[in-house]
Length: 369
Image (cartoon, rainbow, N blue to C red):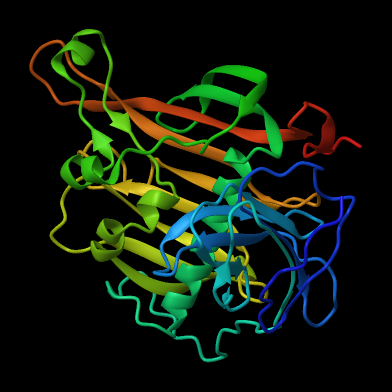
């Protein structure tokens, strides 16, 4: 099949032929392309490509793998724009792309090398500072945007059609000192969504991150539900407006810079306080650590919370490689008395293997060759 050239190429974008990359039949209006680095000419993997309308509203998104290729099928409408987000680089936007009915638009995009660099004089505000705004151009705003990209890429990789993930997971019961008393494990479980469950933002705004049990749940011996954060929560208008932010450093790793967050004063609902740890040179997200706040007095401070570790895959894509979440277990007296800490329940896991959509092996992540 010979592909038509784009009818209206824009600066920095050139027509190209990739006869071996695309299926021979394409239905509906289609935009297909390949991202290359404007400096090295190499394919750009792990970039988020967003299809927008002329009002910059998102229609669809996808990510590039090792080849730098992306595609949007049956896009509908006549005029579109592309936006490219790449960790550590400024965003790129195309001019308008006009499509006729059933037209195929093929492009190669040379991305400008516009690296984002944190200033050498980063002000470390520490956990006592409170900035609920993220003023454009500040270190806080830059770190927030790079973390947002990483979460979006990880979500796209997990939920997209090109790869699947097999995991090893566990459920543990620990005593108050953190010693494991019981453990059950599961292998080869599929992972196709965010590994730690979160609640809708509207629910979190009302209840916080800990939902008390209903009467029926309590009668059945069940306790509260502890929710963790995902990208939709962490970067929501509600979360950004109800938390303070400050830049911090990792005492154990000088290569990392942290974006610390905590609830604003006066927010007494059960919430989370934590840090997004980011590589200062590449601006790649390393991990998220958090603990619950505003819990009952019988729960030791910072004893309950969670962690998510992020990794860039050699085959392209981002993934939450390891995760865990820990919640306290209460010991309620039969008669009058004080509620005490009985221990903790912890669940977690890690991605062991990456497979293609047909189940073919792509990559081991547990050290196997």
